[in-house]
Length: 432
Image (cartoon, rainbow, N blue to C red; front, side, top):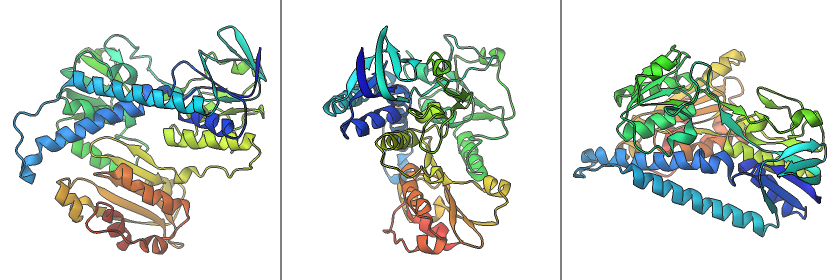
């Protein structure tokens, strides 16, 4: 039986970060994982964004005539795309392994199961630990009407399809759905998105949802709202991607054995990621606070600092940016206009269209806008929503302003270069 100061189950962004912070502060750490990097590195963030980057370049090449560039017969090579994706994932996995081992972390391959409040079993071996961090991530949800099969698949299977499907049904108009719609429509698949709700990206600002639907339909992507897909619906398509959501991966962890409280939304934690068993923590998707790689990493750091007795400040989730890497990109931070109404906030908004921004016209992408929401009386910034070129990069500026509790007047003091895409923020600020 081996003993550690901390045992971490799961090596995604949250688990890996917690392990490094603890090990670099002198703790003896074991990190248990079936696959280093977890869902994000192997099946989610990295593979999808690699494909989206390639799709973005291809879109630009095929529309470059407006810029004065002629390209003869450009085409995408799916096998070459998959090869590049695999090379990048493999390289990043090797880098992660090297980084963890350099920090002095013991890597244990396998599935961790809680057998006691201070013990974890892996491959029939028991490891004892003063602290345990659970970071096992999430798994795709399949509705009863669409069970997984050879042709009804999740985000895991679609990244390695043997060929690009001629027709693809995407069930679910959330983040995963719209991102893969962007990828495979560029690859030439005939796409239909079926969403049982009233709009795409139900958690996005309403104007953003309307804009991405308009852009998708212009690209030939069919969007069917207020519609429930069934096996019969799927039978009319070569492949069906089910992207209706993800669930915390709490099964077969032994949570009942140790009395850790959890429900369908995830493991219950306090502001410092502690469960109801104080020396057991949960971070990332399994905690269900915000299913993002960037928030998981900060949660892992927060849990580690709590274990180290550093009394960290709780995370300000309202200042964590959220990005949809579809084409064009969507990014947001803070609350939506709909949420402001629900919370009875007296607010004001302003919007700058991409078509008003010189750099957007220069790069040939006039779709989209930047929208700012502020409290009317205090003028405090409460939300920023962007759709357009490089939104994933530009949102960091708004996130910083929101985390600093800035008013509109304080935010206006930031002077931008000219011409840059970020002037969309400055333009929207001037209108509010």
